[in-house]
Image 1 (cartoon, one colour):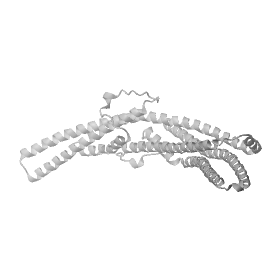
Image 2 (cartoon, rainbow, N blue to C red; image 1 turned 180 degrees about the vertical axis):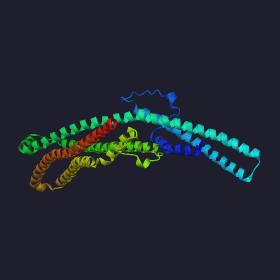
Image 3 (cartoon, one colour; image 1 turned 45 degrees about the horizontal axis):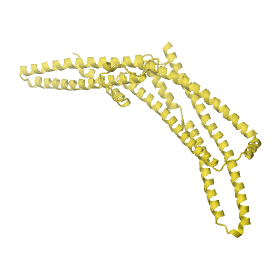
Image 4 (cartoon, rainbow, N blue to C red; image 1 turned 90 degrees about the vertical axis):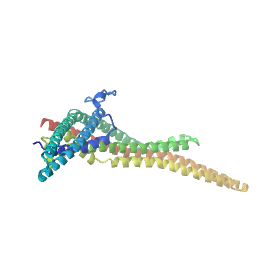
Amino acid sequence: MLNPVALIRSASSRLSSSRFLRNASSSRDEEYESSSNFSEESCMLSGSHQSTLDRLLAWEKKLYNEVRAGERVRIAYEKKCKQLRHQDVRGEDPSSVDKTRSAIKDLHTQVKVSIHSIEAVSKRIETLRDEELQPQLLELVQGLTRMWRVMAECHELQKRTLDEAKLLLAGTPSKLSRMKNQTIMSPSEPHQLARSAANLESELRNWRACFESWITSQRSYVHALTSWLLRCVRSTPDISRLPLSPYRSTRAPPIFKICIQWSRFLDNICEVPVLEGLDFFAAGVGSLYVQQLKEDSQMVRSKRFRGGLPMESSGNMEVVEVGELQEEMMTVEKMADVAIRVLCAGMSVAVRSLAEFAIGSAEGYAELVKQYSLGETG
């Protein structure tokens, strides 16, 4: 006789995967086939990634409900089997025994139907996984490879340009000084520069936050996909031998290799230098704004001091005003020079860290594509 208990328990290992997909995406109707005409245009040659995830979610929810229903039937089946054993031991009336046997037979049929339904839904999920999700993930990895290669080239060019600019500034101090002497700065210009510095600092902080969130989201997404895939094969008897290297894997679908190695790569790559570089750049720009606030405060105090001097000391007052005016002009020139150096230094550190991160990312994603190609040919 077929052992429905063992089969139901084997199928129930997929419950965790359905819970994952239910939490990872927004809810859709379970019967997705009637509403499978999506209006959004696919931006991938292998089809809409969101559409595939939505359908995987719908099928996983259906699998979840099928397993729950099958579990209820299994429990009822086990109770009836236990009841039949007690009836045989006690030697109860044959009619009661026959009635229990008939109930067990009906429940056994329901269990087989439930198992068949679970296996059909599981097969459909595996088909979506291997025929739609896998090519989409490969296309995504290939696209990220191209993106990071272009980003690396751009950041390298920016880095060389900044290095040349720093050499130019360091080699022509007299020219910069003459330019300052010929330039008349209006009283409102330092305040405008300070506001610009504050706005730039805010944008740099936002850039830093967006970059961190972007990398973290990628890492979380790949971790979630890998976790779901491993849950799908948790019932395999030799799961402890599941190979994680493409050279050792002969049975695992290619999607397992892609996601496992992708997850490892994102765990190993470090975005901290980029975040620290952007923090350094933002802090330098922010210091310009703080310095201008200090200058404004000193000017206010100086004006109040001059306004409180007695009239008979007008000669000395004139000397003080001229001296303070010269100091104020020097402060403006010095601040302009410091601003240029801060911008060059901050941009250099930030761009250098971005270039290194982009190069590492491009090489890592290229290796992922290479490993997949070797696995396909091997």
